[in-house]
Image (cartoon, rainbow, N blue to C red; front, side, top):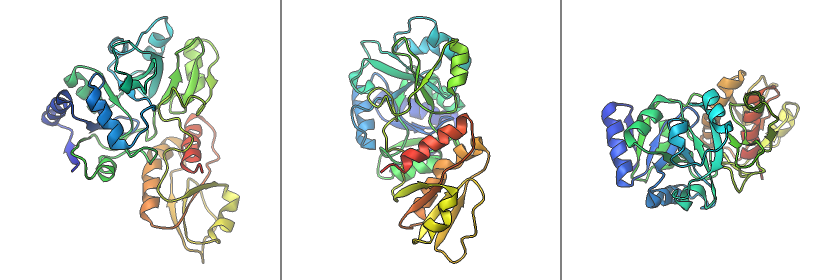
Length: 322
């Protein structure tokens, strides 16, 4: 069964030894929890795909300490990766770069590119130091389902797995990293996150394309339906809440005030109206909606503007896809 261990020196040493043996370990990052194995341990990487039920052509993110560490898995030519790393690493920005030939194909979904990120969470960084090499990790949840932002979420999803879960507390950002594709002369955002295209463009001094979902074959976490609760979910406008809740039992998730829902069978889950706090609470809200055991989830689309609201809307759109 999954075992949650507190963030201590001894438990980091224990987890690093497990990684060296070829085991899979779950650990906290500032975005979401990751399900990790050493990048160069092919059988361990295969175990990640098996545990998650993840398609083998969906690449993983290699977690590194810095740009020099990234050179062990990625071919870094030109000035762009180093400038972006200086500006945003450690932090919630993933770069897609050409991979080094010795990186196992299974760690990159069979691609000739690799996604790399330097996490900021101290637990992840101490684990990387102890492991001594990059750790490839997708989010620590079943494939396509709601990501984990608490150690208890990981233990819930992998209750039957023999898995160490290093508890670093709630994930600060609560949504996955921005993914920027630098594998060509263009700079393309393939997944929205806390680092916005304008901030990236300011560092690069050039325009940045935003094409979330368009890089499904190259970018982690870019499938159309993703981050989804088990209960069927719909994304609705605030003006439609009364009409939709009158149609039958439901859970309503909203980051703002709702009309009176007296007389209807609805469980209301309130999200913060601040975009950063809303993002941090989002996945727990989706999991709580599943636990409410209603036949459907109604998610009120947030109306705010800005980088984090755009990222939240992206996750909600894909949670309700289909």
